[in-house]
Image 1: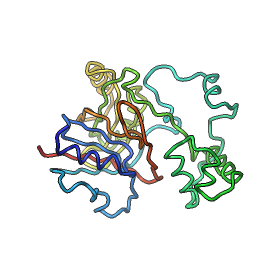
Image 2 (image 1 turned 30 degrees about the vertical axis):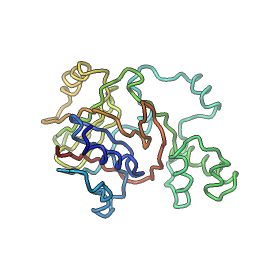
Image 3 (image 1 turned 180 degrees about the horizontal axis):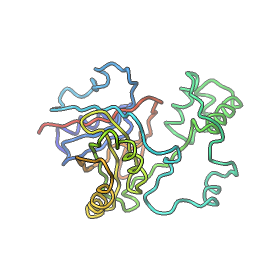
Length: 276
């Protein structure tokens, strides 16, 4: 990583509104996911707190218009078979059904402290949540139960793909005919290699995060799976060189550390090019 990219990347990953960040394209491009309100001031969206010494030649910011896949897409894994019901029970320590039984409830302003604390550490105890919110333990338990049961609040376990033999991570930027966009997105997100797919604004209207074992595996995926999707007439590929931040957690010596709060805000995907 060049001396100009370092300060820029360090500044980005320490921002709480940056959920994901990767170095790509030989280390001269940073791709990040910014969680920010749609009506945020332009100067805030353009990351006005970047180091003055950073030599940024270009900034591209695209709004995530629609994420593809159903709510159970958070259970995605390209690593093989998932956990059995007995294994899930042993991990959760409960017979309680994990499938939401009600309609999602929109979070209230009062929920912000509760949700921010859980975003920082999903294992935060009820006692600690009560201290942070000023609520009673009973109220915390009751509110968590309502949010979890409705599907508004859920918990993920994040893994670094490299630990399980998936060393190549790429972002696909696809241009799809509008009439085919929804079908292409829904088909794409069903591929086991795809961790995330969304319709976005900008020159390319469909993006996907692809995880493969190596370059040959990725080539196979492009030429056999992506090639069969109707409506795609152009694409670009950004290969990840180094993972900086994942699911609001920093990457340090191959481990996820220091999770940061991630407010429930609309998402933008951005790319920055460093001049060297």
